[in-house]
Length: 79
Image (tube, rainbow, N blue to C red; front, side):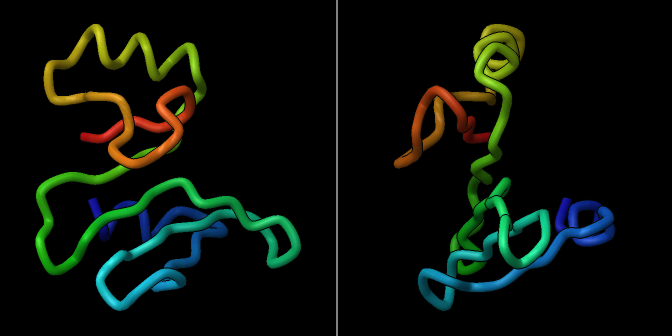
């Protein structure tokens, strides 16, 4: 997943919060938006931003997709 996401056009990555939470952003510097976060020291899941309607649909389709852990549950899923 890291390799795939890193190769998407316009994607940047970094550690804006601490040295273990890897954050992926998209957009220009003035309007960067976070779309994925994961813990690189204890990788068990990834938080992914999603359209609110699609978020609910994915949760109902896949057992491994749950409302975003420590995130806005309307816009984020944890996989």
